[in-house]
View 1: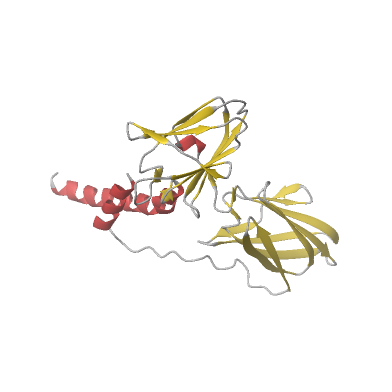
View 2 (view 1 turned 90 degrees about the horizontal axis):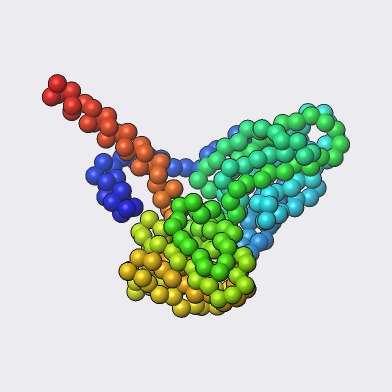
Length: 260
C-alpha cells in the first residue's frame, strides 16, 4: 500500500520543509553535557541552565533521563536537548516526583525542553519518553498468532528494519505465525527475511505466500525478523499524505463547482 501512496504523492507533489526545531530559549547560563552509551550506541544529552546539573542517570527500561540538580537561587531555568533516536515519542516530565508541564518542542532529530521552577536546594528532574532507540510498539497493527506461548510485546525498529517479538510462557515447542504484507515488512532482494530466535539464525516457512511461520523451542524469549523496512516508515510520510489529501479535496471541490 505504501508504494501506491508514494505514486500518489508524486502526482500531487509539493515541497514541505522539514528542519529541526530551533531551541525554545537562547538564554545563556551553566552548560552541561553527558555522554550515554547504551546497546552499543553513543548519545549526548546537553543543555544550559542557571543551576548546577551534577549527575545524569539514564534508564533504558523506563525510557527515562534523571537529572540531579542543585540550585542556589529561587527562580530556576533549565533547557535540555535530547536526541530523539535515544528516547522520543510522547514525553512526561517530573520535578521531585511531581508531574510538570514545561515548554516542549520536537524537531526531526532532537527534542527541546525548557523547565522553569522555583526552589533553592537539591532537585531531581525526570524526562520520560515512550520510545527507545527509535523502537515503536506495533502490536495493534499486526495480525499474528502464537502457539504454546504468550506475546508480551511487538516492537518495530526502523534503524535496523526489524520486528521484535518478546515472548513469555514458552514452556514447550511452539510457532509464531505472522501475516506479511508490504504494509508490515518487505523482504530483502532475494525475497527472503532473516529470522533470529534468541540470538541464533532460525528457519521459517511461508503459507500461501503471505503467512510467515517461525518455529521456536521451549524457553524462547525473543524472535527478531529483519527485512528492508518496517511499519514506522509509514508514520514518517503520514503527515505528507494527510496534507496531500487536503489539497486533492480542495482541487476536487473547485472542479465540482464548475459543473453545478
